Length: 100
Image: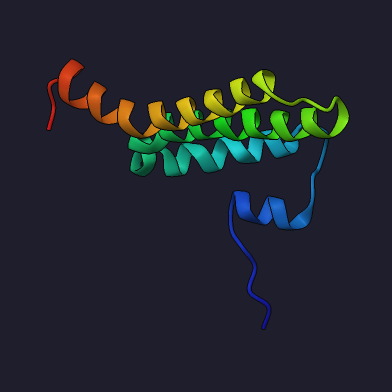
């Protein structure tokens, strides 16, 4: 007996029906998970931005031989984005929104 996934997961397993289908499936999955993971949205956003900064730093070092100040700026930007995602969420929740 073969177990088949239901809903958006089945669409992913069967492959895309038409161009852009993957985006629709991702939106459906996010809508289903969103109420449980709403408190993580900003952390995910800043973490993805930090990963992009670190990836750009690595690409820049490899292709354009970035060293020194330019490399340090990307490193500090990535660290800053991670710090904002981690500490900033607590600051916003406690000081700005006044919730525990």
